[in-house]
Image (tube, rainbow over all chains, first blue to last red; front, side, top):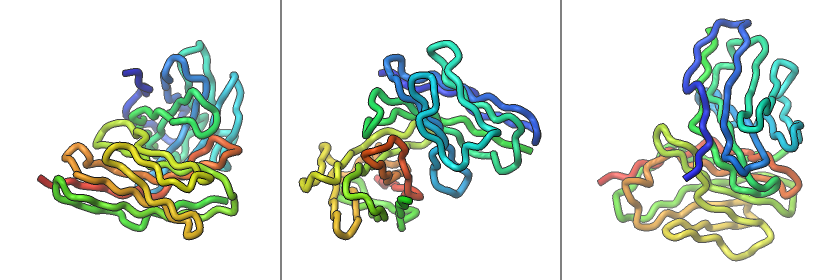
Length: 114
Length: 114
């Protein structure tokens, strides 16, 4: 069964460093998402992406964040200069529908910022 | 803004018994979608069941059913004949019909005991 895969599963970085989290969505899906969950808090929406552009983003998704689909298979989330509060589990998801579609999630990438 | 609340952080049930997980939400929208997602330990979040707000009939998927009370803004999940594999974190989530972002509740950790 097709799955969304994410790498790395865990990354430790120093504050101020750039981090790239990678995701391989399900191959025939066209809609892509990043969510995050800070320990002890709710899963929060970051951004949705369709047709090579951001379709929706939350207040959390500021200029420190960017997303890209560089090669038609990967979907990346870049954090330019990490802060302590960026420590979280980051989930990638994909869907074949833009509205009310079932989201297929990856297992998550745990980011720890020291 | 929409909010979703799951007031039961943890629940447990004996195998083969029935358990109900609670979820309430707040929105000014009249049409929307509600979801229950399940996240087994160290695995991806997967969709359990979906309810469209304009449908009065409660959704069912095999052993999983919902009790959707639109006026009360309540969306509970009933798991019948609980199985050990149902042990997971369960998330209630909301999506507007005009968007693709999911708003999650806090999650309920369900443990099925043998």
